[in-house]
Length: 237
Image (cartoon, rainbow, N blue to C red; front, side):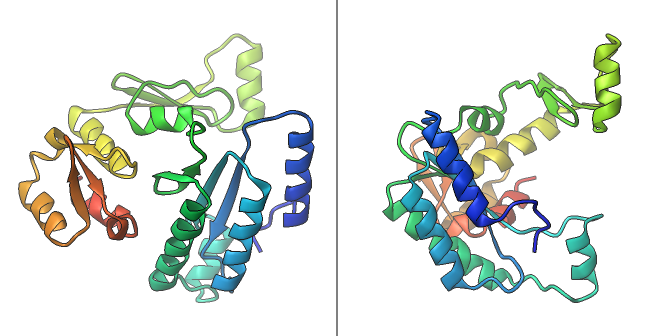
């Protein structure tokens, strides 16, 4: 369906190989909202994944990106995206993984205690980070850049001692703040209240609707709000 070169059985075999080799921190990526996928199938996938006891699980809803085969088939009407069905998949994911002891610390990410992703948390908190390899992004201060996407051109530049940067973006304070709001709202830490001071009406309305709640000095999404995280974030950017 997704055009991947491996299937679920091979994925499990790979997990066993890494575990057998002594790796004690393994993540499994899962995807829901696939054409024809049922809740029963997704439940089975989640339960099987939990039985493997990975330290970290990431779950993503299928999105139709431009310039992909899925986007073209969606545009032709072959595939349909059902937001109500996606919400059911998301709710089931939260229920099963939280019941299994995983901490839902970001909209798409779950971890056993002590195994939250350090890289992801740095990215979500707006910290500087360095990306290595073709197409990788890096950010320091107000500057963001992407390495050359083509791996051959990237390798040629590196071997020649030349810059492998493909494009550079200079962020404005407004852009930086908007990103911080959108990303922090996705986490269980939430967005610092001062970041939302410019949006008093939106904040009050989301609290009234039961989508946001105050938690110490931050505003965090409620369980209902998590299902509408993107819509809530858009109101603040």
